[in-house]
Image (tube, rainbow, N blue to C red; front, side):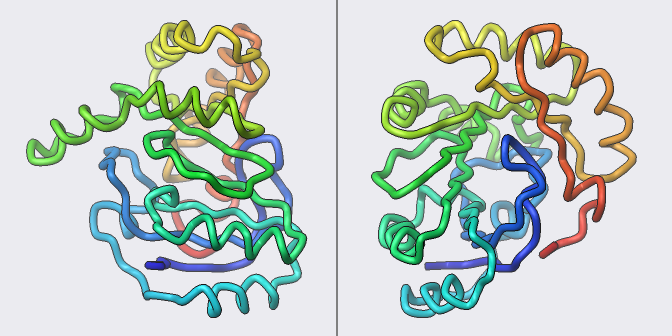
Length: 225
């Protein structure tokens, strides 16, 4: 598998924010969000090919009880199923972070689905059409929701994005509001500070959950922390 990085830190987002975790970040993505905070896995993918044995050793040596498999888009990785089976055999709690555009059978305790909405479209003309054709896959999201413990996590840049989320959720009427998480678009501490209060207020107004971005709050856009 092409792995951009692996490291121990704390989960910064969602219901398990603050939990010490081993992050395994795959490289490669089928989308090109303008606000991507890991461009080294999408716009300019990089990394090293690691075998399942090497990944198993990384998991075994970690002291963290949680493993977060993220990207890029980890659901693109052909051996993702085997990696999650390794994590399960090691009795780890597994989170997969995905945009919900690819379906795959995996071992997972939390599927953190972050559907990419129109606010994610890149200005790059070569990528914009492909991104727009790929980002919205409701059948995939519904399949994942039916099989895994899931949350839906949305990146919010402007107040209009909250209205768009409400419109999107009409396709998923069975999803409880508290499983919907709003997260400020932020790659820097300054951006996070500017959006946190009003995004939290909008989440509360709609009965949604608010997701912090603890890693941005503490480290800004630093990599591998």
